[in-house]
Image (cartoon, rainbow, N blue to C red; front, side, top):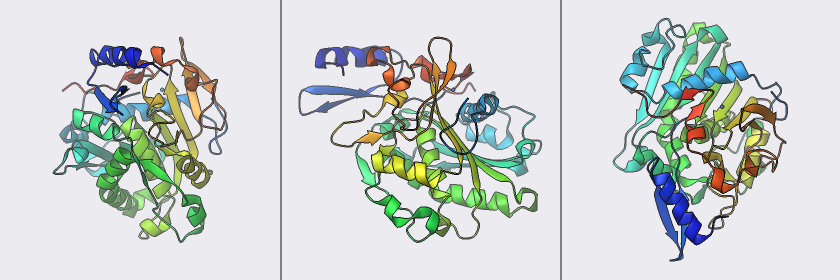
Amino acid sequence: TLGCTSRQAFCQSLHQQTPTTMLRVNGSTWLCFMLVACVTNGAIAGPGKFDVDFAKKLMAFSAASLCPAKNLKHWNCSRCDAGIFTDPTNQITVGTAQSYDKIGAQLLYFVGEWAAEDAVVLVIRGSKTIDNYLVDLEIVTNPWQECTNVSVCNPGAWKGVRVHNGFLSAYDYLRYGVFKAVQDAYAKPVNKGRKLIITGHSLGAAVATLFAVAFRCPSLHAAFVPEVSTVYTFGEPRTGNSEFAGLVNVTTASVDRWRVVNKDDIVPHLPPRKILGQNYTHINSEIWMTPPDGKLKVCDGSGEDPTCSDSVPDNKWSITDHTSYFGLDAGPCPT
């Protein structure tokens, strides 16, 4: 890890590129954490193989989600592929969470009826504003126990599960709107039998993972429970503790699920595994776009493969690699 002096210098260098928060711990050690909005063939997680072309399509949704809600509703943003939704007014539901404190500001999701893939897609927006960065930096974990009385969510699997407080707060703010939007989509005859795809980048990736588990818990929304078929996340930070990672791996074992990391992307290294006694652990299964050319590597099933992105030293962590997956710009959306 970085020493005190080099850590301060590292944080200062990051501040030149993007908003950064520094947290003083025990009066002497400086820790720097920042998460921004954005980012990238295999076996291990779920029953299928990693599909790079499909991943690019989902990353394009994540990039588009950073555009204004009013544009997303009509699918006329600068990152919106006009051919995907032919009748956006009836095929897209956009929801935001505004609250009286900073945690809920600028959180957004959209649910789209994706006819070409015979699917309904749920996209969770990544970090867009300084308010979102503050959510990202709430590194203390809290217990999470959504369902306890159905076989797919064996009560024992939830024992000891703890999730990053900021990500869990974001999930809670969006929870009702997301469940309703997905249920409303599947209430339409045209969507009966269509698969459910979930995706997100950065903060959105962490929250997408929470929804991937939640949609495996029928007791949460008995009116209708779509079958989650696919979950691709991009630039996902560590979202919870080792028990949480185990819960995700077990409850989504039948899902085609991949966690994509672009080269030296800084965000998947945050929060650090051992900080303030939190025991953060990545979910499986990582696809690493290795530097310098982005060649794909399928990592082991541990979530913390030392030969994949976890091998990148902290002095090489990159903001740029977080904001450009597959050449798609996932920084702030041009208006």
